[in-house]
Length: 224
Image (cartoon, rainbow, N blue to C red):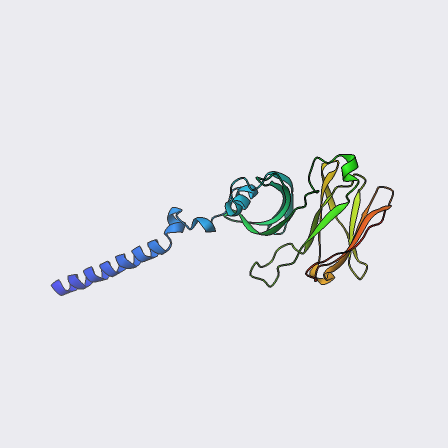
């Protein structure tokens, strides 16, 4: 009789130990104590700044919905006063928003606040964001061209691949002489493109040919 009770007690202790191990293993899910890095953020800006630091997003220009999330286009002002254009892909899941991948570019003469005279001396700058399929990053909406158009007469930008297939960029005005443009591409289009900016009458303001497979791309042709 005593032996039976001892065996039952041992069994109960073993079961209790197993239950404690299960609770410990899943305590994050049970009590909300999961790894903070695995948690999502309630907003896109918070997800970006969770990775890059508070105040990283100076001015949000546009948020473009894509599959499983969005691409955020925004300006970042540094402590030195320079302005950079940033495009980041943020994924949406059951836990909120999570930063995935993106990039930034800047140039001393590409910033808001240019006069018409200053802006007419410039045209546009296009930055290539390569595709990430097959990398550690995984699937994203890229490849993509993202850029800034300064010339006030630019009203349309078209990206053409070597086969002649064209895609028209979306243009988002920030101010008269500072416009965001972007266009999502297909990986099958390759990495060499002709980018052309037109005015409202269809005249070419500026045209460049960029081979993104080269370390330093840019055979540039300017058409006045």
